[in-house]
Length: 152
Image 1 (cartoon, rainbow, N blue to C red):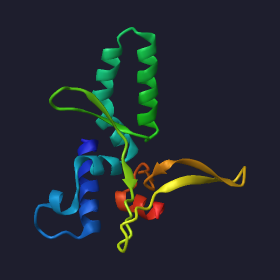
Image 2 (image 1 turned 60 degrees about the vertical axis):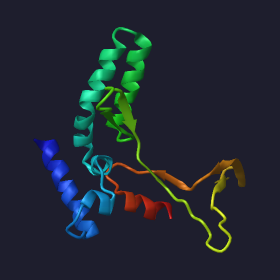
Image 3 (image 1 turned 90 degrees about the horizontal axis):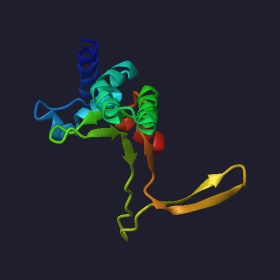
Image 4 (image 1 turned 180 degrees about the vertical axis):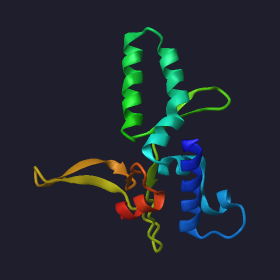
């Protein structure tokens, strides 16, 4: 009951923030189950993950390494780093981590903005890395727009 209450109140909050037209909200706003679950309180996100986590433990059986990996996954869920779901057709457990990624293209020449390195305060230099689009993980309870604002 608490999950349903949290889900519905969070969905109402999302809809309220976006001030939608009375039409297909999913298509218009890009609201999907993942976005709503990401914004649920941590306790409810853990409960939503329980059926998939139970499937992971069941598949691990008595294999010590698999049980250890299942515990690590359970710890990640508990820390709010991800949530678990299951593919409806195959039953495969899915580890869901939401990201916000920026794809910035300069209009006049079509150049794409990428991150080529990261500043190291300790070494006082740029540490080179492979080119990636700028972005980051959406934090527990954070809406995608809030994560975008944080990245910018």
